[in-house]
Length: 284
Length: 307
Image (tube, rainbow over all chains, first blue to last red; front, side, top):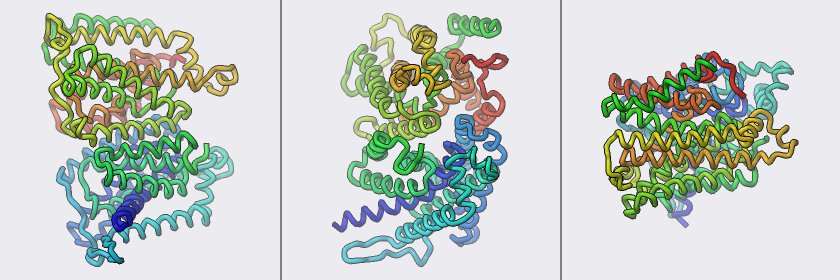
């Protein structure tokens, strides 16, 4: 029982990180029909930028702020200068992001070297919380709570604000949206930059536990894609549900059959695709 | 058309007699071009003709190579068992996965094949008892000794590969000109119309997927013998997207274009990595420049895209 609770909490922690990555991925997919191969790179760059800042200033908060600002700006520039010209044409967009993913990986190797590292824990979160037999690191609980807050924030923005309404309209039907006066190109830039910043924020949150190393970008990318496919492409609610499903399955899979990790993700994906090709909450 | 024909003739001549005058290093590179060209052509059936952008195509190539490696090193299987086993396993996998992906289109197809490909990569990377994990499997016998050929050497292997690839290329060329190939192109252009004309579009896409998987498996078997070892990098995302780049850079729906694309990437990769360790940086830029400057592919430069 203790084991089950601990593993479930670990699963929720993975789900929290996955949600931070996948929410941006699914939204930029919804708005721009873009399969962003560089999305894992945003996560990676987030960890690295935060690491540099933490080394110099000692402050994790400054590190997080810098990571979000730098990677968000990078995402905005990438969308403006390179991706916007292709409209919603998925193939050139995908190739472009693949090129950037390789550039970012090599640039990170050049700037930060290949040694793995981990971000420090915030001092007030370095202990664990005990409840009965269950002992759980408080930092992981903190990340789960933060991701929950981000989810609520994203939901409030998308459901209660004008920007959110425009966003949902564009996801549903970009042509009609632009016909009724929504500036789809500007919205795309905004969504892409916000998605990049969220992934970088995820990198900072996961940094003390997963750390940073060359290759982490493509390690997390498949998980994020499976989340988006299971949840439904373009749907925030889907990203949330998908993150929990994939986080749990991945975690229990790794604990029970370590040699088949990743492969355990195959089952939920195939089941969802067989019965709901557009994902749990996606629309055709 | 004239220009293309002249280029084709020069290329065919280079493939045929080039190795007779080249050093063994260049014969090795040319062998890579032949095998990867075959692989790129198989993806072209999907990506170019059927309009199904698969970003997990290296998986079949890799799985077939792994099958050869496991059969030959783990079970001491004979040559034909390895060859047929590799092709069958790769094709069976594409038949199984094809059933899942053949009803999705466009960007959804892209994303789902990407995820499936990475799941298979994860299997090769983590299923250590069978695949050897990150170290892969080495010790695959050379094709010549395994098949009991009286001659051996890079030149022999080259001409065997060329023969196999040319045979496959002829079959694929025949396929895309057949009514099946025409139907695929029509589905790419307008699926609802083909459906209303009574074509089973699912079945056509499914068959295209399996056929592409079959030829990719053939390439995978050759590649396993060429390198003598297999590793997870054969089926990772970088491999699949490099393959994708070969097809789009060369020119989709041309069959010859992807071979040109494969040649360029192989040459660039080997020449560049001799001068700089920043090969990935260069490759990244190649992606970006290729998309910006030759969106229809080199083979289609100066030509109207054939539909």
